[in-house]
Amino acid sequence: MKQKISKINVLIKKKYKYELLENGFNSEDIAAGKKVLNSKRITMADNTRKFEDAFAKKIGSKYALMVNSGSSANLLAAFAAGNLLRSKRYKAGDEVLIPVLCWSTSVWPFVQFGLKPVFVDIDLDTLNISINDLKKKINKKTKALVLINVLGNCSNLFEIKKIAKKKKYNYYRR
Ligand SMILES: Cc1ncc(COP(=O)(O)O)c(C=O)c1O
Figure 1: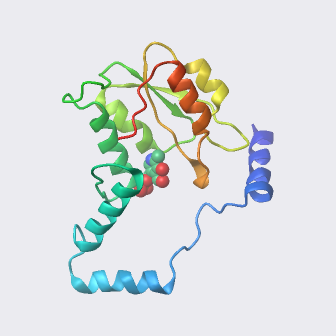
Figure 2 (figure 1 turned 120 degrees about the vertical axis):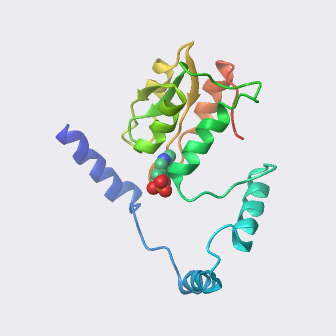
Figure 3 (figure 1 turned 135 degrees about the vertical axis):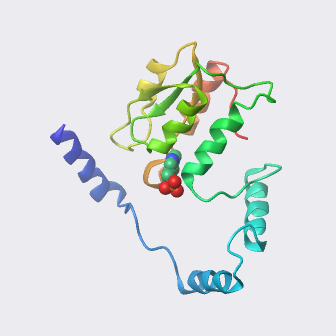
């Protein structure tokens, strides 16, 4: 285990060089933030609406909804995908695959909905979901897959889409 952790550290430092956290605000961002604070309207105002519209357009969706955190976004996504009004949805008792390296809030919305979480190993080169283990963990009860893109690196969507297509899964994008 110790060896694996030191291997991960070496990979991150030498190969990818992505910091977990860096200060990404420039003076323009800070000035924009101050303008919002001074307006005394700090939520659901013009900037939020503009961002939602631009984001929806960018991803080719009819709507986008800004929320306060990644955790809230997970909760909404989990319940939206199981919405009774959808013809294609998952149900309580179905299985959801989740990479082991995740947030507690990546898992709990699905548990709250009644799904059974099944953990999938990660790939030590990318820290994202292991395609090999993903193939092993998929079964008839699998109805959803949560992807965590660690440190800004995207999961291998080419392979994952191929697997989803082969298994005839619906590819939930929105
Ligand atoms: C998949 C996932 N779940 C949960 C979180 C936690 O987000 P927050 O701290 O904003 O609630 C993140 C944050 O990046 C995330 O990517």
